[in-house]
Image (cartoon, rainbow, N blue to C red):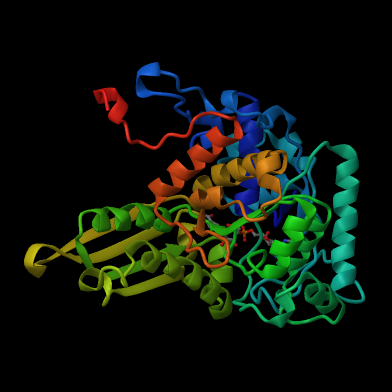
Length: 423
Ligand SMILES: NC(=O)c1ccc[n+]([C@@H]2O[C@H](COP(=O)([O-])OP(=O)(O)OC[C@H]3O[C@@H](n4cnc5c(N)ncnc54)[C@H](O)[C@@H]3O)[C@@H](O)[C@H]2O)c1
């Protein structure tokens, strides 16, 4: 169940259908193409993850969702302009068969959009209960469900008293508390129905104590926020490399141009602030300036996003990185990533749906609330109170693979490897 059926969502659903029909390959998806090593390197045993794990099969996936605009997914995919007409025509009847349900929406939280198919209710609780009914109806047609927010970026919100406990949150919904955004209503509805909730956007949604409490109570997993797709993914590779070699960083300037609807929404300063916070957090976490003041204490980090319609979904992200080496001598690195936003995001959304469904079926994981092992996919990973989140892509990857081994009762891999040398 996807909340928001725009560029990422239609690229996900159209992509899954195209793959099911043998028209394309699931490039970028770990669950579909990744392998996992089991045992020692000399065992030569690296099955595909999808053979090793009891993941849902692509053929068994059924999609539905909500949007503030009407029209079927073929029309939505045409509007998004991510996939070419040739691909879309081949799966047109399937896409035409899916229409979004009316949304819980309030323009206060996404200023640049004016919705046309929106639920009305006497208060936020009422809207959330209507979402629960939608979920209950889908439960009758399917065996298991996952809800994923592929909706627009909402305005920047900071946690307040209403987010601290489940009781306060539920009262807040009745009182129409302004701290409760539509995305939180979907999350509450999903978790209350015992269903995992994934947040692909940077909004404050499940990373609040009230949702953590609800998630644990209902055995309905939650995870981080904001898909780590393009510029931030590269950042979470480069920054650990500098740190691993003890190279200093004095400045990191990142700018983007993009022209899709997401870019239009992010053109609003309040939505941009949400994205900015999500994109800024990781450098400090990775570089640990407190531990390495000589290398990272004075880093100047800036992130800009500019709405530039001619590029559509084909984003360009530039990074200028000022680094310094031996005796403080300065150097520079420039990255120009001509990427495709939704092409990068869709496989992540797929993996997250399949892994969160697996987490919900795994006794040792489902009661934990936050699934920190899925940090790999997020710009802003969630973690237990007092535990700093892990941002380094390779630590995240190792952590995820070890969690998968743990789920299946296999030995964890520490990479110590002394035994190969008789140690
Ligand atoms: N690489 C990426 O594409 C990427 C990476 C990280 C995060 N994201 C985030 O994913 C989200 C989706 O991106 P997109 O490019 O698909 O955007 P999009 O604008 O094409 O689609 C978002 C959809 O959400 C709908 N929507 C907004 N509020 C809603 C609500 N309350 N209920 C139901 N529907 C609602 C909009 O009508 C729109 O159709 C954005 O928040 C974006 O920041 C995308």
